[in-house]
Amino acid sequence: QVQVVESGGGLVQPGGSLKLSCAASGSIFSINTMGWYRQAPGEQREFVARILSDGTTEYGGLMEGRFTISRDNANTYLQINKMKPEDTAVYYCNAQGMSGTFSSKRNFDSWGQGIQVTVSS
Image 1: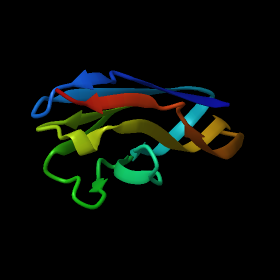
Image 2 (image 1 turned 30 degrees about the vertical axis):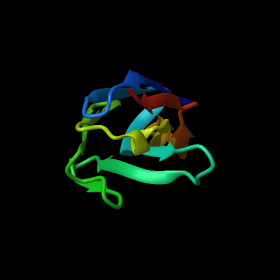
Image 3 (image 1 turned 30 degrees about the horizontal axis):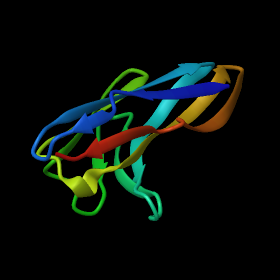
Image 4 (image 1 turned 180 degrees about the vertical axis):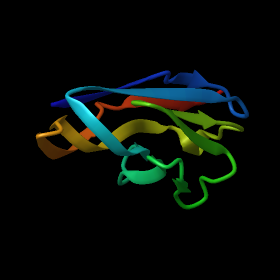
């Protein structure tokens, strides 16, 4: 079983910056992809960014430019700059890969519980 936990959320003023962290732990054999999604009140969950095991990054919609995803082993980070009120949302971390041991691997797709980010003056 693989657990994913987000941290670093909170209240930020417009124009400010925030760095979210996400840690995956448990019976991890390998992690292929780690990513971030967000869900604003009354809206559907939307894709923010993902980073593959080879370091390739992908960003959703208009995210590229103000959002930067990075990764360090089983941790991923999301740097958000020049924040806007519309960035207010619950941010979720996702990790996908293989759990177990070399002789007994299985796929996993784990989500964190989400962390609140509020941009307001």
